[in-house]
Amino acid sequence: MPKLDIDEYWGPYPMDPKPDLSIQPYEIEFSEIVIPLLMLHGWPGSVREFYEVIPKLTTPQPGYNFVFEIIAPSLPGFGFSQAPVRPGFGPTEMAIVMSNLMKRIGHDKYYVHGGDLGHMLGCILATFFPQNVLGFHTNTPLLMFHPLENIFTLLGTLWPSLIVEPQLQSRMYPLREHLMRLAEESGYLHIQATKPDTIGIALTDSPAGLAAYILEKFSTWTNDAYKRTGDGNLLAKFSLMHLLDNVLVYWSTNSITTSMRIHAETVNKRFFAMRLDEIPTEVPTWGIKFKHDLVFHPDSMLKLKFKNYLHSTIVEDGGHFAAMENPDILAADVFDAVNTFLQFHNHTKNPGCQMNKIQADPNAAQTIYEFSVKDIYGREVKLEKYKGYVLLIVNVASQCGLTDTNYNQLNELYEKYAKSRDLRILAFPCNQFGGQEPGTEKEIIKYTKERNIKFDIFEKIEVNGENTHPLWKFLKRTQSGTFGDFIKWNFSKFIVDKNGVPVERFGPNVNPIDLEPHLAKYW
Image (cartoon, rainbow, N blue to C red; front, side):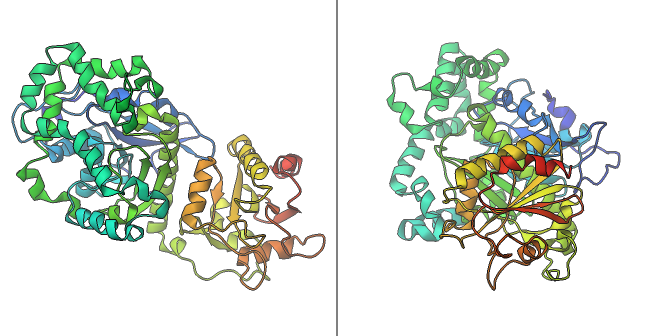
């Protein structure tokens, strides 16, 4: 993890020309593509937050052909990196140091993940350097200083459904309850934004005092209810060793005072005058929202700045320190986000792939590669992207008696054969059978995320009748059923070979795991 000397990384440096990585990151001599990911911590965290999540990001995962090279620096003034020696070094200057660091180590284009202060720095990088930042993933998705933020929030007290989805309203309203919590938990910010050196003297005088000051944040910012327990319930989500490791980063480097000065450089007229949250960015952005974090902002608000805000992952647990508390969830979400960013750039560079409204004739088509479909996020996908893969195409529903068995076994097939045999599973929600897929796209996304579904989910379609999707007309024409070509029920299954030709069809009564010998014929 890089140790920063600010003087070395401050200011522009001539760089050798770098390859265009806007679509593909660089490759090295093994099967996975290696993607640079800049991970930025916050306060009172440190690089120690990332120790559990880094191995998960650098290890190949089923269904993805890339892994990450992690660049996780101690921010200037934190831990092992040099602190500023004069006033005026705020978040913008810190972000520029991060940009120069990435250029100096050879990454002209890269992805960014951040939380807390790291979220702010990621926002600034995406605003200042959109040509370098290919995608921004944040576990603290919020706007800090946008003038419409308060208007949106107050409007929501009268008409919450205009601002936030009904199932998420409790994360913002009643507004009084959330404002009371925020007022209670932001007292540290007022002290550190006005007199950081004063509190710093007290905290550098006693390791126990420093630990109490930091660990209290890990308690109440993880779950507000923990403040009512005698021990802060710290060990419910964290290891004591991990917590003390983070405290020792500050104690052993005597950096608590210098770390707190960033708040004085943020909450002041100079930084407010920049109005950075009002400057939109086109960098694709993805947020993960943990239930007990300090602030919740709906997607409608985030899109005021992030014009390509692609998705929010909703987690019904967890708090502010996501990487340390939920490394598995965070790592899976980063993989999902970057995979989507890659598709976003491919569609942007090739507009014909982004919106192909003319479908092939289902009665004349020869392969599925002639068709386009929309994924569950509404993006147009040309099926020629699956050339060379064996496919299993299924119509799915979330409230069917067959759902548990089929979803579990489809996941099992995917995890077993996605990498070893190039299997891909394409699932199409359909509400034509007993009304058992009534949800909206967002509800379907939430449901599949909760089930940890790894395979590809597409938009809700019709598979029978006048509005049958052209792809499914083609599938039914090429592989008729026993009593007619119509789809009989949820979880009908088609196998498509590596040439894009449908070769076998199975009814809802056939479990996915029983298809193994049939799929094996086409590996």
